[in-house]
Amino acid sequence: MLAQRTEFEVPYKALERAALKVLDGDHRDEAVEWLAELGRHVDHVVEGDDRERVLEWAARLDRLAANLPEDPLAPGYLTAMLHRLDRRAAALAQARDVRERGEEAVGVRDRVYAWVAAHPRSRSGEIAERLGIAPSQASRALRELQRRGQVFLAEAGPGDHDGRVHRYIAAEAAHAAA
Image (cartoon, rainbow, N blue to C red; front, side):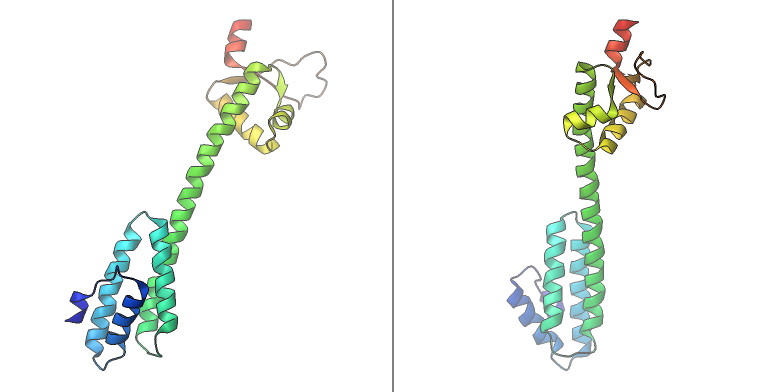
């Protein structure tokens, strides 16, 4: 059967010629088998962690669906494969974004810690301003540093009249002062 001999990792035009040869014929069983084989190939692509390859295959199938003659069989199969590829691409993009945000958070946390160690009794707003980060990033980093025991809230000073103002001190400085 033709489906068993199909090589899907070929240039797009070769893939399109193979699809037209099978899907434009009168052999429905062969067309269904070819689409099933293509589906298994897409399964293999979806199971990988290569977002670029998933996006490449989504683009190939989208183009193939647009270039095929009107056929009641192929669009349903191709649409289902495209949906799977799109969902996988979105999941891989989300995982990449989470990784990048985690790496960025470590960098911000390190910068905040270095600032607090060098400037004891700093407020989160001052830290954010001096480091050029959003106040929410400074607050989040300070909470994480507190949770890890790397920074502590400093005692209120004589000029601190607002009880909502928190000043921070690095753990080493706090232990040295004690």
